[in-house]
Length: 200
Ligand SMILES: NC(=O)c1ccc[n+]([C@@H]2O[C@H](COP(=O)([O-])OP(=O)(O)OC[C@H]3O[C@@H](n4cnc5c(N)ncnc54)[C@H](OP(=O)(O)O)[C@@H]3O)[C@@H](O)[C@H]2O)c1
Image (cartoon, rainbow, N blue to C red; front, side, top):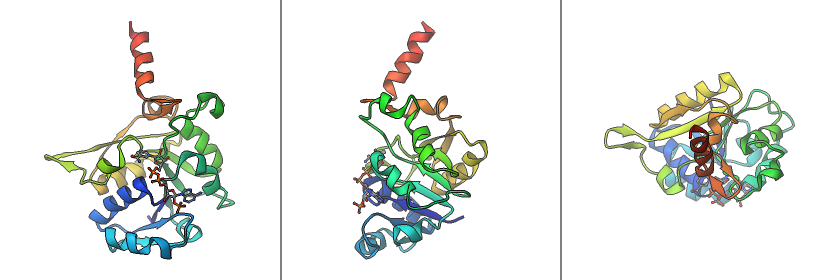
């Protein structure tokens, strides 16, 4: 398996730390040329290598760590996403649900990456927390995974374990996955409230 992180801001760098901690090779890229990222990438660890966006997209598994509104630009960079797994770490916080045609936003993202297997993950932890060692007091920090592609979640869960996290599979994007999606200006909480009301 080969891995790339697209977006080398707060979340991209936090994830690069997770790869570096375990000496797993990962390519990082943004809109800037690789030379602009090389120093920062090297400071994280020798397994973190900056490449151009086009070269980074040669990886099998691509973690999307760009602002939600930029996902289409990334998707346009490849004409065919067949055979690729995209791990969507974005949060569409503040995007009105009506702008997403009734879809949870990762399903909206998946539509742009035609042919790719899309797994939602790594989006519920703030970057500062995600950057730290996920093995805490003998336990493993949880990451939630959801996907509409049944066979896509297992390899991502295996990667999470390699990185030291404890993956929790939530099922489909619009089912368990909805628990870790922003909806408008609310993140998760409103959905929990809805479930609670239904129980009463
Ligand atoms: N920050 C958090 O704690 C947190 C937590 C969970 C989830 N998230 C989600 O993670 C995503 C990234 O957040 P962030 O806080 O890391 O943002 P950020 O610090 O602003 O970083 C965004 C990165 O994306 C790159 N980028 C923007 N447009 C791009 C494009 N079209 N192609 C390639 N690279 C592009 C930017 O670099 P260039 O300008 O060089 O292209 C930058 O490296 C967002 O969707 C956010 O909601 C953030």
